[in-house]
Every structure is written in structure tokens, then in C-alpha cells.
Length: 101
Image (cartoon, helix red, strand yellow):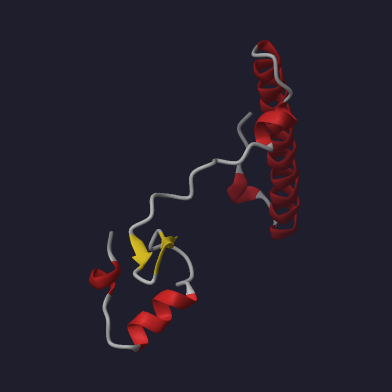
């Protein structure tokens, strides 16, 4: 299917562009549906529903790297927001190495 774009008017080119965009979206939608069906089938083959698998939490938030010297049960991985005890220790002049496990 060869189309001579050079001979088309701007209006025809824009119309063709819209048709191509719609065709691409339709293609992607069909492929996603095929992938969903394949994923559901794979989950069923292992005795699960896809919803069961997707609702699982990853479990691990990472290993703690720092602990509160006043309460060793309070730990922090070094990711995300700093706990209040970390902020307080840093404000008192300590550094993270002082809190490292």
C-alpha cells in the first residue's frame, strides 16, 4: 500500500494522520487485551487469579541501616522520610554514621 504523500493536500495529510493515530490506538488496545488474557491464563495455570497475584505486596521495605541509640527497636532503611528521631539526632550535631547499624 504505497501512498504518495507529496501529492496530498494538507487537509488530506491531516485526515490521514488522524486515521493512523486511531489505528495505532486500536492496535495497542488489542495487544493489551491479548496480554491481559495471557496473564490471566498463566495465573490460572498456577492456581491463582490475576487479581490475587497483582494484589500481593512486595513484602520487603529494605533492610534497616540506622537505629535509634535511645531505642534500638526504632530503625530506618535510609529511604523515604527521615523519622523524627533521625532529625532530632542530626539537629543535636550527630551524623548518620553515628546512627548506623
